[in-house]
Image (cartoon, rainbow, N blue to C red):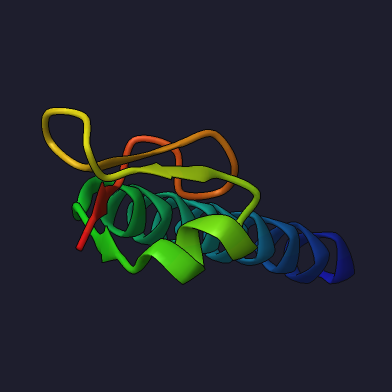
Length: 70
């Protein structure tokens, strides 16, 4: 009887852990998928260089690499 309870607890824990990992992966994909617009000062603070005169006005390098600068 004890073994059945322990086995059920292990299965339940594994199932809940799997749901937690799935939720974290979905949240990370959503956060990275949305394009953002940063200010020139945010680009510099992130370690990048705002390329305002280049086509598209993008931040080059750093945390906001490839993000549009406004």
